[in-house]
Length: 173
Ligand SMILES: CC(C)(COP(=O)(O)OP(=O)(O)OC[C@H]1O[C@@H](n2cnc3c(N)ncnc32)[C@H](O)[C@@H]1OP(=O)(O)O)[C@@H](O)C(=O)NCCC(=O)NCCS
Image (cartoon, rainbow, N blue to C red; front, side):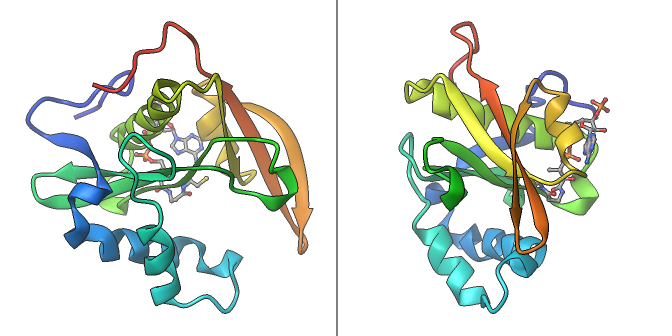
């Protein structure tokens, strides 16, 4: 079932704070480790678990949201203070957006991104930022994110994108 405009179908997937589902923290950390460990050479799984434990706010940054299907975690996103030491002037950031491969293409990534941005708006921010790659920037561009910077680090280019949070955007339920 395709989800429109970041809304979730009733009685199916839902977005929760990860702090309320500590039993799934390792699963989310494992997703992050598998997906992004190459960006942090030498990092080990328990380091990712510990880092995620520090992102367990509820309506408070840093926070992590988890997409649930019944009792099963199927995606996640974090809202953090800042994601790149070269642009500490920019805050807050969406980070670590991930949807389980078998659940992709159903609008869940969009829904997590939209909810993460709403959390930032509810906390009083007018802008939200993120770091991505050339490949993924089209995903964000689709939803109104603008490219504002390119940073070359260890031969890899990071794209910094920004989104304005409009007064008319809804806040989290
Ligand atoms: C990126 C990711 C979160 C997308 O999740 P998803 O649930 O498949 O995304 P959605 O179904 O919400 O996609 C919404 C729209 O974006 C499009 N889209 C998805 N990934 C895209 C990409 N890489 N480039 C361009 N468009 C993309 C979809 O086709 C869909 O378009 P449509 O509404 O016209 O059909 C998922 O692929 C993922 O977890 N990837 C691995 C981790 C990752 O790269 N995270 C982003 C780090 S910056």
